[in-house]
Image (tube, rainbow, N blue to C red; front, side, top):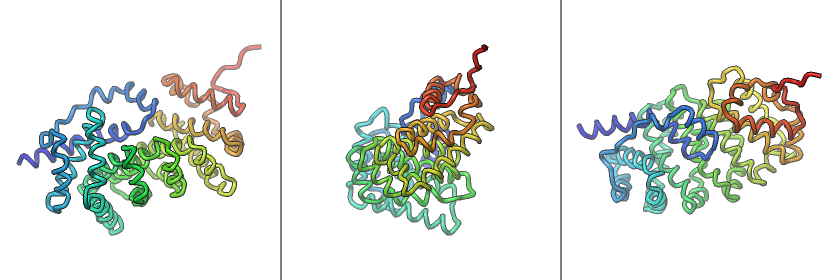
Amino acid sequence: MADNEDMQEIDNFWEDAWEEITLDFLDSKIDQDFAVQNCRKSERKKHKNRRMNKATEIPNLILQFQEENCRESALRKLSTFLLEKREEDPDNYYWTAHILYNSCGTMTILLQELLTFSRMMVDGNLTRRASKRLINVLTLFQCIAADKVTRHSFVKSSVPSFLVPLILFKAPMEEFENVRAVALSVIGILCQARESDIIQWAVENNMVEVCRISIEIGNELCKVIGMHIIEAIMQDDSGLSHICNSMCNHLLEELTATWYSLVTFLTVDQDYSPRLLFHIIRCYILLCDNVGGYNVVKGSLPEPIINGSFHDIRERFPLIESLIQQLLLTVGKIDRSIPASPH
């Protein structure tokens, strides 16, 4: 009975908080501002994990991965513990990353879990329970990706490449969007430190295109994380050069077309998070650091950015207002949201 109660409590924790927790991994000023304005963190109930209170239990839980009958429960308990302790106990959080990656057979077991889920995707047998189980696995991958030592080994192992089918898969069940978002967040955590070898891996494995597609097919959170990853890649010179390379100009064309459609959509539905507009404007500004990118931005900047369609958002978020002004100044466009001075 106690185990069932714990399972339900953990499920409730995920239902209430998984989106916020996922975004917490992605460092963005606008995310923080948006969270403050909506008072989400202050209103969220703190989950108490009664079944695991000490970091000393972590090795024993990882050992339980070896037993198929114990694995699902162990994954759930460890992932929930890590989500709670990431900020308040970072030393043990990163210590866990080392144990997960270096303990005998653990990465093989986690990869096996991922492949089992992938077979269910192909066979059309996805369930809500299977999705939650995989999210617990992906939460452990988040931990490994967050540590500056294990993330490099993680990338070299090619395990992150196995996340791409999860990101690109189209499933009718709503719960799968959670899987897509958390899988994307693993890539986001890898890229957000903007380490040159990680960015090079992202470029070589076509993560820009993967993220572009996730922006088109995913829910709001997937769009935000996809934009965050693209921005992180563009902040590296090699990443920006790759996107603007004339030898693969289709990538830049498709990317800006996706952003154009997204901006147009946001003018219609401004209930969407301002995080999306923030990242889009940032990416346009970054493109302007490249001559080819600058020419594309100047010739195809969406009209709603110029004509004041986002007036309310710009008033609420001075950072977005400042970025739009910077972008328009860079490309020599007149901000038509500002009334012309009378002659």
